[in-house]
Length: 553
Ligand SMILES: Cc1ncc(COP(=O)(O)O)c(C=O)c1O
Image 1 (cartoon, helix red, strand yellow):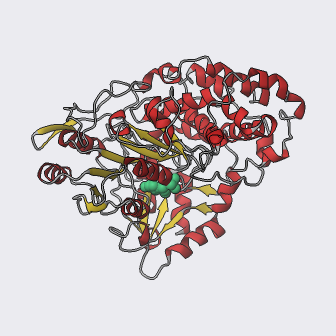
Image 2: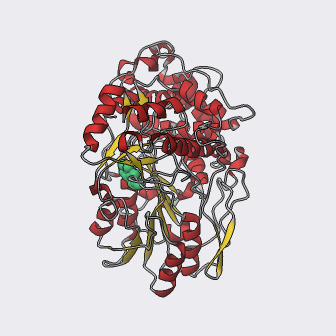
Image 3: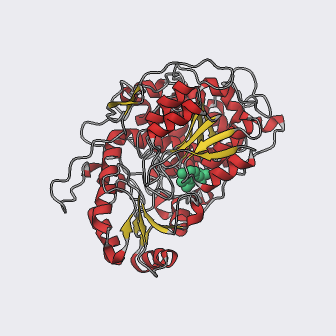
């Protein structure tokens, strides 16, 4: 995995600065400087002397494929990029330095949430959710079932839980498999187009729960921005990308049902959680209910901030028991519920929409870890705080994460240094010193995701998860952990007696070119009883890839 990721992150081409379409003659810093519209002295907080909280990532080796013109994106029949994104990702021509700056300017002329509005199916994009969050001193808001009218939501049917109507487990529409071994996958066009706009993989990449493969355009957008930094100066370049990044906040916010103003770019999901907890300053000893199978670094962060974790009730698989959660919230409500939507160690989808309804009714804020779910399943579910990362299912660059906070919780956060007037309060929580090129790459990756159609992505990922489980279960004595039809693409396998998972993962990589992850029980010690092998294909995977895993096992 490591070598592969380094290759995918190979923005080192910037350092080489050459190649077709990237000749220095394209670059006229004076002309381009004149095009930079924003007052650059305002934004970069470097000038305030504020210390960087988190260091930017390094630059890897160059990838020869970056020098080639970006291929056209073969869009699915009938699907179209929103106008803004079409411009952004350079549908007509390979992106070039000059062209890209022009498009940044073009984006700058648009209102902040125009990108979201342009993509009508997002429905909630750019719309600030009106409901409040009940925390200390905040009135409880009655809230309906959080099912958006927009077409991108999964179908969520209602059912009664206790005295309330809540949506049942979200389930993307997965075409039923007609015969036990009929592994037909929906949206083959999507898989083919996803593959064709990326560097050729060195092997079979089945590891998106760790880190996905970026598209040429995301790689090039990041590389171009890094090049601007060298040509224009980092802060001039950052100012030139300001409007593009704002469009990105708008679209990302829309994916979780929040507005651009509710979004802060940070460096990772962990950094987002730390940023939230640092700003929230909850009293020491406050109770935070989380899954017994909570991601261990999250538990460590909660405890490091003086909070007391206690288990949410779950069933035998580790899925939250909604009715028992309702009882907990009624009888002895914690200060916060923290829910990891899909685990790192298990491809189980938690009933987040149902829990969001219950939390809202109980006046308990819900924090959703969407590191494994954004770009994978529907995350617009009514949580009060969501955090995630770029590099997994959205297939953006490493070193970029996102924190989404609804205004009622944002009002409870205290920044270390106040942000200047005129920007949303949450901007005070964005890291100053940042891999801005990575953020630019993420915005392009999110454009790819929208163009592909989030519903189609989810349906194909769910079908791939099912096919994985059907194909690999029992191979070589390995057994799957998740229910076969769990609507996620992540599958974990328990080894047969005496088989070492770490050694198997290495063998699959070295002998078969299969990229997977070995997960030790320390990742979720409250739930795992032994190590597992994780297989997490993205939409480009084929049945043949999965059969190769079974054969190798
Ligand atoms: C469920 C979950 N939460 C949080 C994280 C942390 O993400 P990051 O590495 O971006 O901090 C991960 C990473 O694998 C994860 O799987």
